Amino acid sequence: MPEIVRFAPSPTGEIHIGNARTALYNYAVALTTGGSFILRYDDTDTERSEQRYAEAIAADLAWLGIVPARVERQSDRIPLYDAAAARLKAAGLLYACYETPDELERKRALQRARGRPPVYDRAGLALTDAERAAFEAEGRRPHWRFRLPDGQRTWDDRCRGEQRVNLDAVSDPVLVRADGSYLYTFTSVVDDLDMGVTLVVRGEDHITNTGVQLALFEALGGAAPAFGHHNLLTRADGEPLSKRDNPLSLTRLRAASIEPMAVASLAVLTGTSNPVEPVADLGALAARADLSAISRSPATFDPADVERLNAALLHEMPFAAVADWLAETCGVTDPAVWEALRGNLSVRTDILPWVAILRDGPAVVPVGPSDRPVLQAARDALPPEPWDEATFKAWTGAVKTATGAKGKALFMPLRLALTGEASGPELAPILRLLGRAEADRRLGAALSQID
Image 1: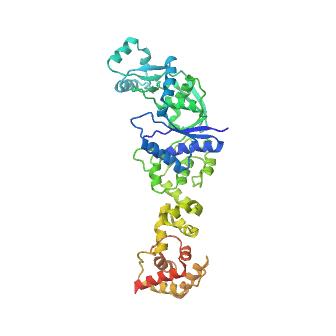
Image 2: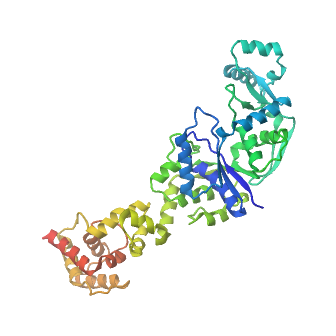
Image 3: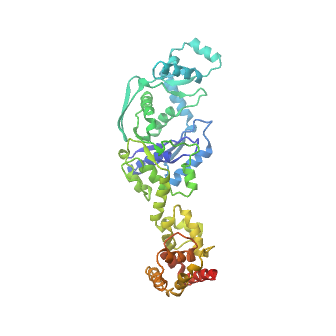
């Protein structure tokens, strides 16, 4: 059946590869079931939410290839939340509390000191009208808590199997702040009901929250969606990912010329039963994004894997995938240039200095007198055109016969004369791209430098 899924980031910072994991799993469900993907900004925290981050999130998702069927902002849906909150208040399920943050922390500290879980004592439920009036007279504004039902809530998790949350061990959640703004726990449920969301895929840090939200779905008289809680990406050192000061933010990875499918492949396949390898397109990756294949253990990864996957992806990338970029960036339209250079790239922009070398020749040729015999023999042995894939081997074989040079002593002077670099792409395709006239010119220039 087609699934309606959503990704609900808070626009309070740059999203990172861990956030991409959640977005991509949801998008994979939409792709594979013929469903729809909703991008829903959780921006009710007006002090921290910023338009620039919302725009960055949209750009990052587009970079990954995620195309939302619908985009919503919770800040535009306040009347819907007002109506739902009024229903809960009328049912006696949303009650006013007046404790300050310091008072709540003292309560929790006292409970912990007594060996008890720091669960809210529901003091707000016991307040009389006179006590509430006295707090109001002090200038206190209430925050509003949802009265949780007793017992457990269970569900068949798409990632983790049967899950249960004991609501007796959970504090009644605050749904409305003292300033009247709503918290995600509440707005998410209202929106999921209103938008017909059928499956919520999110991180395992939301499991307890899901138990609470199941009770909220019941209280609002709606059917809850299915849930799947995937493991979270953590660094090899155990550090969690954060929106703050995060080198793995999608915006920064994009600016560093990392390929989107390298990021997507790592985000989706790490911490699953599938091998972590580059996948060329989202459709193929979605076919591997089986929620039941996600491990229950932490998804530990090395940030260097981004670069490894990126290089592997580029080394197999067909010319058609980069043709427009090459033409716009450096005027390259010959597929042979990409085929010759891609195996030496870590990021696609690495190709730019090599294109310049092919076109203009090396700026510096670091050869010396000991290289003269090889270079002269190489110039003398240049075969007539046309050249093919066998030309390089025949040419270097002739130089070896003429000079007795082999290995590094043979190939390094040739590489330096033709490219000016001590390492780089294979010389055989470089030679074919240069052609006989240009190869002769560069060898001659290197010999002139020695003289």
